Length: 152
View (cartoon, rainbow, N blue to C red):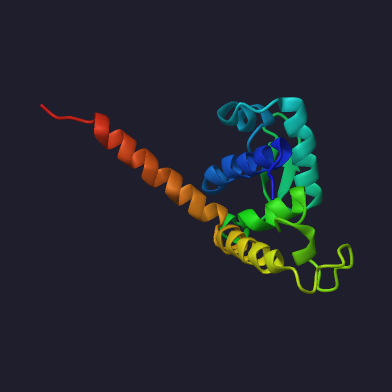
């Protein structure tokens, strides 16, 4: 599995929308792009793709922008990766039960290794929600602020 810029930007965009979810959640493309240093034209294409996938919705007008179509707890990193990038398995022979692209598939010793790798990746990305990412972000920022706080 390799995450392209498109996949990376899709994840970052959804994260920015998850951060704003409790505040009403409508965020302009410029506001989404800035923290992740994403090109707005490319991000616009990605957000349209995410809209087709049911991850985001859009609102037109002066206060328009994009917002999450579902609660952050209902969107996993794995489902986004699969939607944007395709299968997460490290090699194609483990994603299908009846793979016929290799004559060695039935006895290949490495197929089990790659299956274990794919399963390990799935456990991480399929259990990690955007709500969890927001909580991690908040915890990290609380820790950073406390380093610089002092009292006299």
